[in-house]
Image 1 (cartoon, each protein chain N blue to C red):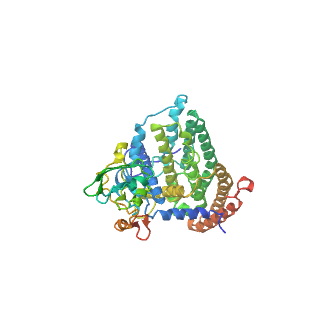
Image 2: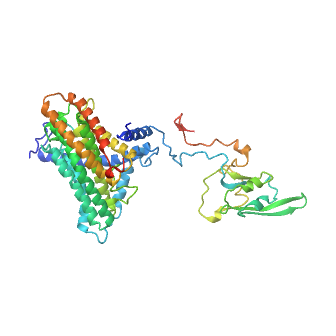
Image 3: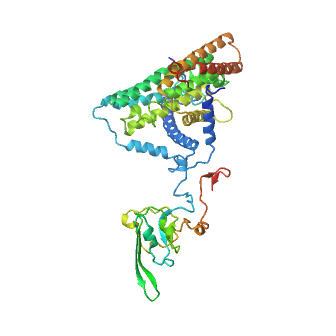
Length: 362
Length: 165
């Protein structure tokens, strides 16, 4: 386990580095989450020919801080028959992985809390902890609807973890490193071009893992009460909400780092490129949410096991063969090959994809 | 041919992204007001004291019985004097029958639409309250000559200009 060397141009010692980047990550999460909530509400509203929040402050920018303040001042109700300790602990456990994952995401060259040489593995491991918090919340609320919502979420996340991780392995094979810093440095061609199928699978799976539409079955705002957070109020609800948008932020950051070339880009400063790319990825998430209707639970599971999982395996195989056969070839050569492979595979698997023993076609 | 291969999702995405560059339909009400129809049966009757002869046709035709008219005879002029003309707007269903029935064009429906009040008693309108004012213009209902002077109804967004009519 190698705690990375300090960035050469960074002043101060280890603890100064630690302190500064902890503060940066905190501020990044809080500000970006507030911004994302505003951004999502506004852009979704415009796509639906509405206006969205535009009263508080310029363009309604102060709407999210006002909502956050309201949530903080609200009464915190604990159900009388709840498991109080677990009930209290659940939102914390659901939220802290969001901060921890960002420790290995480089904001610009060398600007990250810890350049772990097992970075991707660390992300995969830590981000699974959120599920534990969700399940604790469902269990401790002593409410059957909370428990059912939490169980659905656990089922989703456990299923989708597999294709998500397998689709990441393609990137790791090409780079030969698990460190996110190294992965960004290796991206002379953004990996979205080299690994188009991997990107598609990762993005789809990630949407399901963070419960964004069209896979937001657990909290389906138009159908259910709130799933596992039914019994939460006040700042605990706020923490769950923060965790949810924080996960969207984390996924945007990881997609940016692994597939879009991270902080690398011409003209603009590096950190700004990173933020722009994160914003763009989040816009795509919102765009998909506006467009696609919610899937059923059997469609959700079938998509994970019958579509994403085999495609992720084949993608892994294809990438491995490519790297073995042409170890020194330029990445640009792989781009058309991989795009062709993606199109053929997606068309083929759409043909095979059936639900309910083929009685129901989708 | 590609109907089942995810092409539907791409179509949907293109629809939503085109909506991003559309003018929102939402009206920001207190600042931005749309004109109602020129023939709107808006709130509250408007009564012209000079034209009214006190014949009481409006009161007879009102299905709700909300018009209360009391007259006395002015023998020297051989005419009715309208002592009391009171409409309980709480009962009014805005059917407009009184306007259509009035033989002397003394009754009109209103063009305004912001006439909410706090007490039921405020809904009972007497002679002074029924007069036409700036806040309560006449609507063109059953009176095309009034409608001709009112502004055109603003509907939704004008597609060509990209702004409201």
